[in-house]
Amino acid sequence: MNDSKPKENRNRPSGSEGRPPRRRRRSSGNSGSSGASNNSGTPKKNTGGRGNRQSQSSKRNSDTRNDANRRNRPRKRQPRKKQQNISKNGKLHVLILGAGGREHTLAWKLAQSPKVGKIFAFPGSAAISELGQSITIKPESFKQNVKQIAQFASRNSIDLTVVGPEVPLASGIVDEFKRRNLRIFGPTKAASELEWSKVFAKQFMRRHSIPTSSFKAFESTDAAITFCRTTEYPLVIKADGLAAGKGVLIIDSFEEAKTAIDDIMTRKLFGSAGKRILVEEFITGKEVSIMAFSDGENFWPMIPSQDHKRIGEGDTGPNTGGMGAYAPATFLTPELMETIKENILAPCIKGMAAEGRPFKGILYAGVMLTESGPKTLEFNCRFGDPETQVVLPLLESDLAEIMMTIADHKLPADPSKKSGKRKSSSSSKDKDKGKKKDEASKSDDEAFVKQGPTYLRDLLSDYEPIEDELIEDEPDSVQASKPKKLNIIWRDGAAASITLAARNYPGKPELGAKISGLEKNKQSNKQSKTQPRAKSQPQPQPQPQSSTPQGASIIFHAGTKRHNGAWVTSGGRVLNVSGLGKDVAEALQNAYKAVDKIRFDGMQFRRDIGHQALEPKTPVNAE
Figure 1: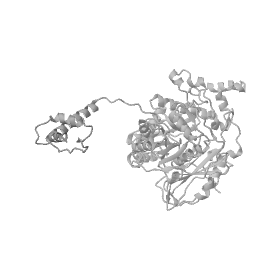
Figure 2 (figure 1 turned 180 degrees about the vertical axis):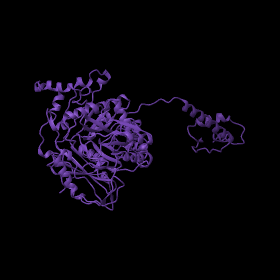
Figure 3 (figure 1 turned 90 degrees about the vertical axis):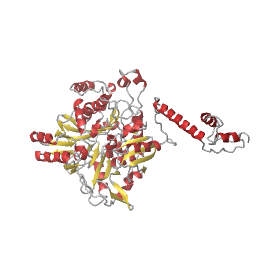
Figure 4 (figure 1 turned 45 degrees about the vertical axis):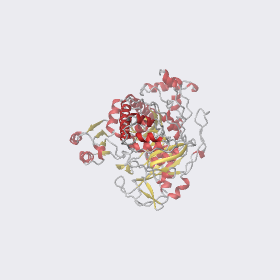
């Protein structure tokens, strides 16, 4: 006990003997704990004396100086580690952003992958919840919760995030995920400006000589009206920003143009999307939707499809988000497809990279087949809706594997894509020369053209990259990292989808109507698996008749919810009823058979989906 008493005296306020406060602080610190101990092991009580206060003050000053030094010291940036698949069972955790029919289709397709373990969706829907788990993140607006979504992905070990709608892309969600080194499938905010600014897209097409209609952009209401006084009609007026597919108006007279300009720019019919407008030349022809996978340098087109945007039969009435679609678009010949690839898709991917906006994800090109050749109507930066509902049911390959490969690796170059040069008149001469060659020595391009109606479904299957075409004239660093091989295989047959919409759509829809008849379609709401072609097959082989399920239909929920145990309407577009068949006519018949079993108050749909693909003698009616 002799040692403990002097230590207590040093801390007494009245004590004048002992070590200076600085020494006492250092001595106390050397004890290795916050409180001193006596020989008996009992913690020593701090009496709060003057010396102790001086010691604490000195320590605080020292800590403050150290903190300031640490803040001023240049921080060494640690390289971020590449995200790995971190699910314990080896299965991917996938997050889907969106809640509509397109996102239900994505969840349905991804759930078929043996690589996928669990699917999350934000905000999701009751239908998507049957395939995974819908989650709630506050706030619920994609424009405001980009960081919160990224935090959820990080904390819940999400291996792959798939962006459905355009709003998250325009809000920079891909940029935020990349900043955190999280894997996400979609283009950056800068790259997706192709969609969220129609003025930018048109000016981009002009810069890179991508064929499109003539146009003029306006930021002033008076200037736009003055221009429309002297121009020819009909014409097209578009809001510059995102307007849920409704910002495109076909105008037949000056009075209509004046009203449309006032509605968009003055009355803010589409909100901030109408700060600028485009006035475009009206062009005619058959319209086709081309979606393609891209890794920022290479691209692979999907099966072409055709959307039906007008609300009324015969393509009448106002534009909508899409009243139905079918695939493949049988009127698109291999030669036209090649022209679209060389004159539209290739220069778009190349131009975006040249402008420092490499495009990685899904590039969607809306194309009009005019008398003077294919012209670009618009670019979108995600899966089309409702095109996704007919294209993905025909995809035999693993969608999760394709997305992971694009997110982590480069795609092999398209075997049918040449050096990226524009199509010229000499191409026909080269084709004639090629016909004279022996069949065994023909190029891959010639074989591609001769494959007939199923060429797109077999275009990507079992392709081995050609070394000369892939890495010629590239630096050693590029040659060292060869692209991962992708086997993208498409089913034989066709798919068609009918959109069932609520009353008053595309205006303010009536909601809450009870839906009946879904249980009658439940048995056919599954896709039967087909056997992929063997790698040893050099040419596409005929598939057995059972490879395309007869009478099959799939129902994707676009705007529904559960209420008191029943399905009710919760959006303008309510259901996408997709049918499969050996051709477009049979697919449409199967889709309309399923539609005929469904009822809800105010239901509206078009009965002429696919009319451009059918012969006049082939009627399509709901039974």
